[in-house]
Image (cartoon, rainbow, N blue to C red):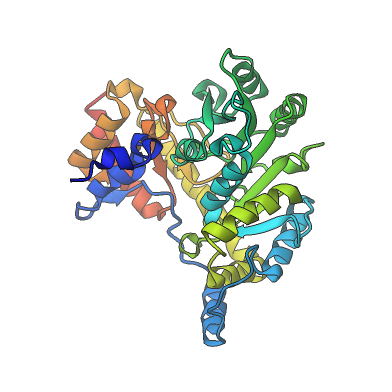
Length: 403
């Protein structure tokens, strides 16, 4: 009999299952459940993207691409970023196409966190610390640990509208056990929808320069910014050289299943990421790359229509939660709200479980996004307004008996 506890990686064994997926395994068994859970657009990929992709299949585009991805797509991404944000990259050396943004995060961490491989490293060299903001997307901390890094948390508080500040970062950097060399940003944020204003970004940039931090900036929801245009971190003074800009197509273009993301940054970092990519993944799906290129060329109008609809849904759901007595921050981007359920006297998991049982409405417990998410729930408004209205009525009925 094999003792698998002695064979499997201790790090992998210590990882908890995703709080989102664990909860939605239960949801999947329920009939007619209204789900405000998984962060996936309810829109179908724009028709022109689908049509071009079908034709590409008929034309025989079913083979590998180069490790970095189609050069035509990388050129289109470079044009897009230059046009949208005045952010400029060399498509031949400074851009890599990845299997969603999640793979870009994984490649970046493995390329930067040298403590994952002790060969050639000083015996006394500490593991690299990666400073991140919580509440955060469920995969960040596990990926840091799998790369051999040390997760170092700073908390974005509801009192500050869940927006990260330079003071938060400095406080953690100055703590007794700090060993950070990487700052991980995500804005607009999953799960809160919070973004970071230009003044705060400028202060964070100055601190990154002062402490010589490399910045990984996950900006997958950047195009889904509402009142203010998104500001990529790499556009701030002095930040292009030290920032890895991550973007993709899943959210803004309703292309989750196509699995295409991209990373842009210094050619030395991109080269290192490509080296890992060529041994672990080879290339991103060819058809997905063709679809992504088509989206950038012909579907910008569809992107903007979807963003405008999300804004209407956001206004609807924020009003609904505040009206029922659950304080709800008004997010600047993405398609999530993070209402405060503490006055019900229940913790996040209890609220989610009892709501599901009583009203057949699914939300994600806030502590799935870290301990600081306790007392909150995440609700996605990437669903039709009629469904949101129906869900809000059911949640209000549930909450009325609790507060």
